[in-house]
Image 1: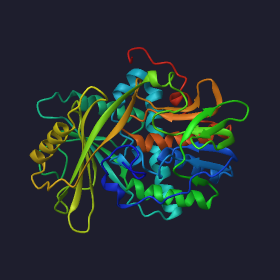
Image 2: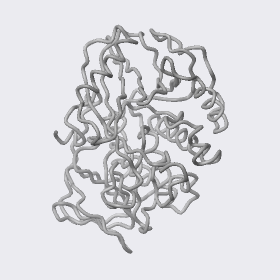
Image 3: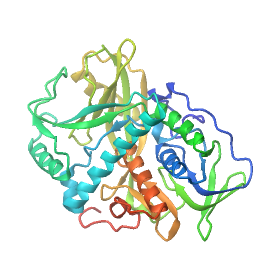
Image 4: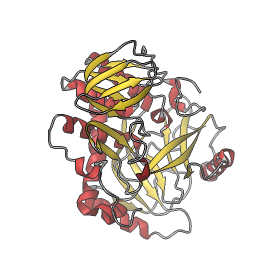
Length: 402
């Protein structure tokens, strides 16, 4: 493991965009907001706050993107993998609608920043397709279609099969206006844009403690202190609260393999099945062949020690459906934190008005992270925070979810 990959030993396919090195913090500093974490959550937050005139310092214990952002498959989806009919059951129709709006707003924000800042990250709008594994009931599709449309995904529709795939998927749902991008190229561009707006980024700077109060402080492993009016902890696993939030999260490992396929074999789109564990895939255009990225075989962290078997199952599943799947080029795993009621915890840390936290992204870290950044900015500026109640870290688990 190195500073490029602080969340695992295997490198993902995204590290062709080598994140730049930022100097470590060399002394005590003061600022309006200290952001801990240089993934998409932390950088999106820093960029938004700096764009609105705040003095921001961001620290990370490696390079930007060296954690879970560099281990994603970079689906930008407003179709939710926890399913809208489940969200309705737990959070009601209004909660499901706000959840959809939060992810749709995140995709729009990424697209807008990409255009405004001229970030070359292969952002593209694509369709998303949900299909059912062979032999399993199709009821889930009808239930999900109705719930998705009630939540606001009006263009969702039922099709006889996913178009253009080399296997028969059977009936599926099509969700328009999803998207995909290259996450580390986006992060590199976002970091450069944040610096232009005044953000001070320090890599190789480990936050050892976060202390709340009238003016919160972050103390680094080297003894340097950042004093700020507010602190945002965007570290995937919270480092400031060892009990309250951790008891509402379940950690999982997910596995990913990639290999070349002949150009055009797989149409650009996001694909998911409804299995348990489920599979998810997308394609990246290459100069010669395309690169097919396939994930799945999730399990609770600590309840399995069979990584090679997981990769073998994933490869077998893929080759059965995509016979042209070439020799695997990359294999990696990622950490997924599942909240007990499907929604991330993003907002003021319980008991600390000036400390904010983002965690529990489930399987949709890219959009949940950006929705969290939108939420932080509204809370910090005392504006109406449309997502605040649904994402509130202090919320109690709903009945039937724990």
